[in-house]
Amino acid sequence: MGVELSQDIDVAALYGELTDGLTRQVRIDELLYAAAERVPGLVPTPEEMDAERRRPLADKSGIELAQGLLLARILALPREGTHLLEAMLAPTRAASQHLDEFIATGRVDLGPVMVTREGRAGFLELRNPRHLNAEDCTTLAQTEAAVDLIQMHPEIQLGVLRGGVIDRAQKKYGGQRVFGAGINLTHLYQGKIDFLFYLVRDWGYVNKLFRGTLASDGTIHEKLWLAVVEQFAIGGHCQLLHCMDHVLATRGALLNLPARKEGIIPGASNLRLPRFVGDRAARQAILAGREWRAGEPDAEPLVDEVVEPGEVEEAMRRRISALTDSGLVSAVGNRRMIRIGAEPPDVYRQYMSAYAREQALCHLSPALIDNLERHWDAHNRSS
Image (cartoon, rainbow, N blue to C red; front, side):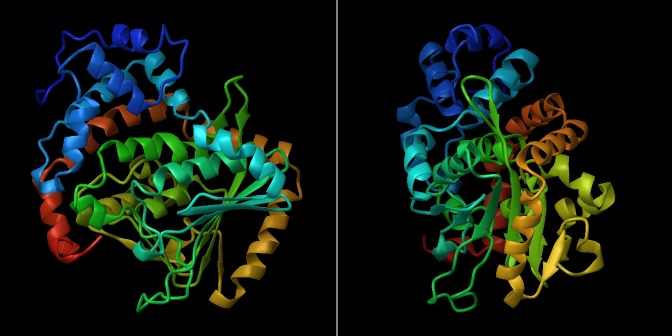
């Protein structure tokens, strides 16, 4: 598997074969393994990936780069790329299995994610307290299933994304809610996070937050989303704010995208953040580590409402009522019109084509290892 994907590969024809002429939706992990079987040596097999996962990041062989290169070529094709992205918007199997339970009981415990219904609101609570609600391969599938459950519930009009309470054993944040610390850098350093994590995350639940869940009959299940940010929204959790219809944050909450210190590309933030804060401030954040604090004037484009920590519950309930009073049809309709003007699907597809390649290069770069050791002290942290 070389650095460049062979130009002799007819990517459109291959994708057509793997999807039965674009009549079948296939998620990217299944697609890549099918490609490995169809064209030996093109991308890693499941067995090769199992061996790769047992290696720390510094010792990986680099076979995942081929996955990024193939997916980049597929997304560069308008018809095939659009089909693949739509496949990633389909409800997950886990969500389909739990939907009846959620409708009947209003509650589904997915382990690292809890999803509950209260009236017209569906609450998605992130629960990875040992790692300050960071994201990793133990949380990703559950988060996507929870988004699907809220989107597909017929009585829910609004999704509420919130971080859970941190273990009291934690010295600084014990007993408090935090929104999230981004990607689990300890797991990343230890090799427990695959390259595909980035794409499954952004093309899956993050894009569903932005565009809705796409059912097999073509129906888009889309809701308004409210984020409740307590303490901080770091990295990937700050990226989520670009998809929200309303952001409520406690005064002083930290918002940042530490891409420079981490050495990876912050999802779709390079595409979306300039729309909120302008090109210059976005460059400062992504390339130079600029941060924002909720309640300060320069953070106003990122936060809709700032409250004191003791006022969160009341403010959240008040905002839920305000966002659902106008009715689901008009609210979601206006949301769609804003999105169509701001980020057409083809712009997103082209961005993600480049992202698949560039993120693969970043994920496997020695500079990422160096950044994690210098800025995160990763070699001294336990999982």
